[in-house]
Image (cartoon, rainbow, N blue to C red; front, side, top):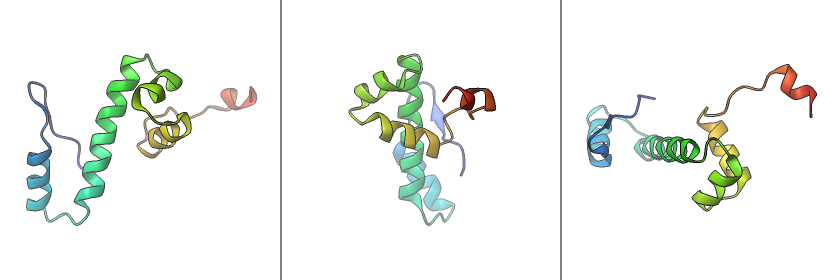
Length: 88
């Protein structure tokens, strides 16, 4: 997937992204844009709440499990190390 094109002054321009993907001949525009928008939202919210998934889920209006699944799908969670797994 291509990186999200964000103009710092204007934010994410969905129309421009749709046109870019159409011009590139993409056949899964809906999925790609959905993931790009999810990534932008999740990064902003997670930064706002200092990485607290419970608070992020509350602010987003989704369950913590849904948030965790979205973060994992988008590769936004750090890989667990063996040290972290031992404490479980």
